[in-house]
Image (cartoon, rainbow, N blue to C red; front, side, top):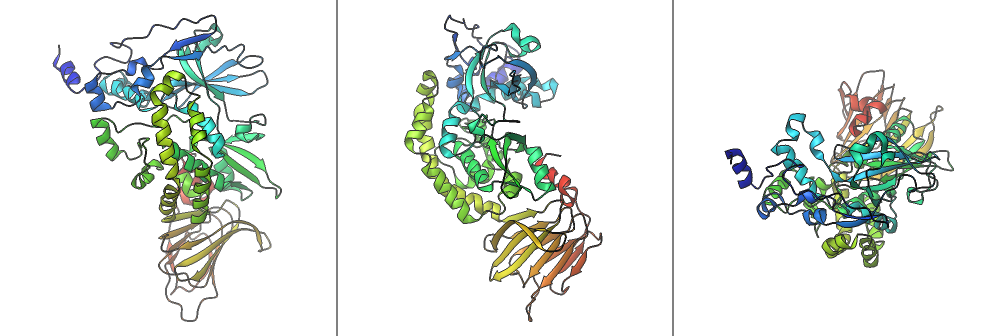
Length: 529
C-alpha cells in the first residue's frame, strides 16, 4: 500500500472519496403505500479510530434508515408543483418550486456538502473528503423538531416536512442533481404569506437586504426589537450559531402611525444542535474556532460571544435601544414558555428510529439549557453594552444626549421635522458607564442635529460621526464649572455647524469610512451591499 494511504489510515482519515470505497445503500424500493425506508447518510459511518480523532458526532443518526413518505410533485399541494430554480448556500442543495397560485416552496437537502467552498482542485482530495465527512456534526433531522418548539416560544418559523424525492421525470432538468435523496420540504418565506400563520400572516415577507435598506433610508421603518431578541435567545437555546443576515426573512406589517414594523422569521436551522468537540482533533479546533459551539447541557458564559459572533452586526444594530431589564424579562418569559411537556411533544415528531437514538439526549439537554436562559441573556446584554453604535438614517434626525447624573447619560433620537421641531421618537435608552465604555452616534445622511445637554460623565466616551449632510452639534445647559468630557466630534468638514465649548469637547477632522458615511455604506456592516 502506498505510504500516503498508510499515513491517512494512521490518522483515521478517509482514504477514498465520498462516493468510492464506502458501502453504498441500494436505492430504496417504493412500496404501494408510497413510503420508503432509507438512511440520510450511510457514508458517514467510520471506524473507531477515525471517530476518536475526528468526532463521533451524529454518525449513527445519519446511517440509520428511517421511514419517509415519497414526494409527489403532482399531488403534494393542490394543483401540483413545478421546479423552477436550483439554489442554496455553499452547503445545502435547494430546489425552488412554484404552485399554480404563485406560492413558492423549497426542497432543502438533508445531506450537506461544504466542499463547494474549496478550490476545485481540493474538493476530491483528502481535505475535501475530510470536510465532507464533518457534515456529521449536524443532526440530519434537527430542523424537523424546531417548529413545535418555536410555536410554543412565540417565534416565527418555517414548517419542514421530511420526504424522499424519487427519480421523477417531472423534475425535468433537475432530475439528475436532485433525484433519490431525502429532503425537507417547506414554504419559502417570501412575498404574500397571509395564509401562513407561522409567518404572522404577513402580506409581504421580505429579505434582510430589503429591511436594512429601509431602516437606513427612513425612520418610518423599524424592527420589533423585543421579538428579535426573543428569536435570538431561542437560537442560543438550540445552539444555532450560524445566524448571519441571510438566515433571516422578515414579516412586514403596517402600523396605525403610518410606519412599517418588521418581525423576524429565522430560517435554515442547519447548524442547530451542532456536535463538534467529541473528537481529539475537533476538540482542539474548537478552542480556536470558538463560533463552532457544541450543543451540550450547559451554555457556558465564556462561550456566549462565540455562539453569537455571526449575528453580532445585526445584534448591535437591532438591539441597541433595549435595556438590561428588557433582556431579563424576555429571557424569563421564554423559559416559562418551554415547559417539559412542550419539549417532549416536539421530540415525538422524529421518526421512531431517530428518537431511539437522540430522544433522551435532546430532552435532557433542552431542559438544562432552558434553565440557563436568564443568565445567558444577562451575559449577552453585557457583551453588547460594552460598545454601542446608534445609526440614524438618510433622513434628518435629532440626537439628544443628556447628562442625568454620575455614571449615566440618557439618549433620545427623534425624527427632525423641517420646522426644527421633534417628530416621532425613534428610540431612547439610558447608558451607564459601569456597563458601557463607548457610545458612537452616526448621523449618516440628512441634515442632522446633535444636542449635548449638561456635561456627560467622562467615564463614558461619546463619539459623534456626522456623515453626509450639513449637521449641527450644539451644547446646551453647560454647568458653570464644567470639566472636560470625553465627547469627540468627528467632523468631515462638509459644512457642519459646531456650537460647542472647544475646551470641553474635542473635535477631530476625519474622512468618513464607507460604512460611516450614509445608509448604503452602513449596509457594508451587514454584508448586504
